[in-house]
Image (spheres, rainbow, N blue to C red):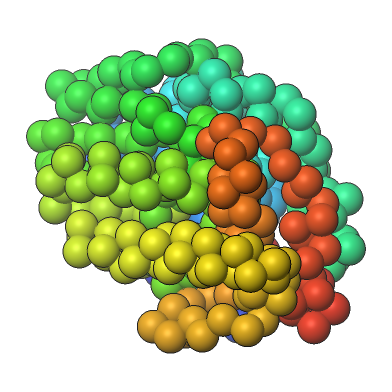
Length: 316
């Protein structure tokens, strides 16, 4: 089943409406175009007595739209919510899931507890976040946990290395060979590893390949298959190579990004992420541990400068 999802509101930005796509029997991806900043994908698994959801959304409006989409498929309550990582586009709406158990890696819980909703106008401009409060995961794991939706097993696994963040988890459905990757995979958008690791993300891509999934639901962008992993691998390798050459020449990340030829990646959304990715790659070249804290504020200032001094494009 693939159908537009009516959220009961006009889309001020002219984006296509979200789609609810049945990627396997009782398994749904909720895909929100265009997948740029703060516009993420989610998903849900339908059981006889309850629903398991995968990620919330960034704003009250978008999360309620997701909950409405679930309600059109099943009247059963959402009793379990999985967070693939801590970023607000995947967790801001946690509070709207009532008494659902929120499952995540323990680093994800720590990240959610440290963040806030809103206050990002200098970076993203005005966003109508809605009436939301921080709601951290309530059940955490270190390596993996197995959830059951009737007789369908869902393996929730930490990817095992800093990558997009330090707490990235995937949801693997071996019976259907469907893999929900969170933001380890962007489709049509530039990967973003400022808060994780470039080298670790390359390791994560190899680990994603091992699943031999037939269907991948990325954190942003259209549902895809494992062939898209090659494009992400190529981009991350490009970032590493550019960082090594530019840093060796004494060129700072912003200048390196401005002078770079993006080639095949030029059409991907949010090209300014290259600057943040270079900040992380430079830290790794300096020998800093993968995923260790770096100056995020300076990286975002450089990203805004790369973007012509304007706030980053956000249509959430």
